[in-house]
Length: 254
Image (cartoon, rainbow, N blue to C red; front, side, top):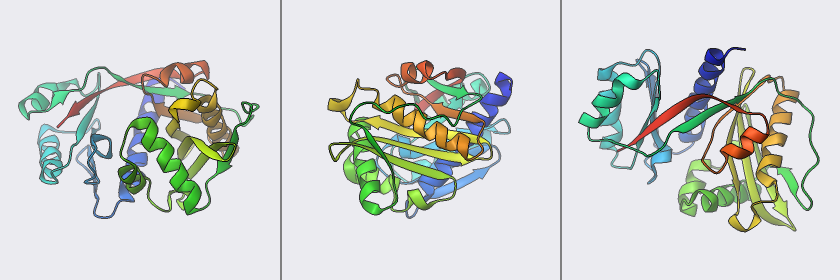
């Protein structure tokens, strides 16, 4: 599979993740028209209110999307592909958005395997199948990404684990939730999201183990490709697992 195809599938899966995750929040604005996806929850964090462009995007559609999220009066961001969407940089500046320092890596692993590596000592990975385990998952993510607990719980929702194509895990050590992970399957593509570890449990391979388990589950379900958008902290972990950069994103905050 060539890099252009990997990049396209990674980008499409990101749209699907936003549609599912943001769509769980009551009163969300979800639309994908004229090459621009609008995913607005109204929650007070830019991550949960995003505009994402595609090849067919126009300046008018992007302006309309910004107006929609501005009207919701919550922090939001616009995500551009670094090369394909460069034409929109001047427009976003004119609209008063500022570039968030650094580029966000879009990464892919192909092919993937259903083999499950041994878990780090003491780690118990559990498939989320009830509200208690889902809340544990949400709280780990909240602490790791420095988001208020009620905001993270609202975004994760109450039934994420039951939605088609979604797999949600919480990792425990001695009964305490310390790691989270979530995947979205679209066709043969597996998107990896919410890989997080509590600060005092880092450095023990939990994030890598969680990612590997999600990949193995996806491969067993027929996926051939895993994709993700990496944080600065997470990128070295994913590179060690074999992920490689297929495109980069610019984030503009409004």
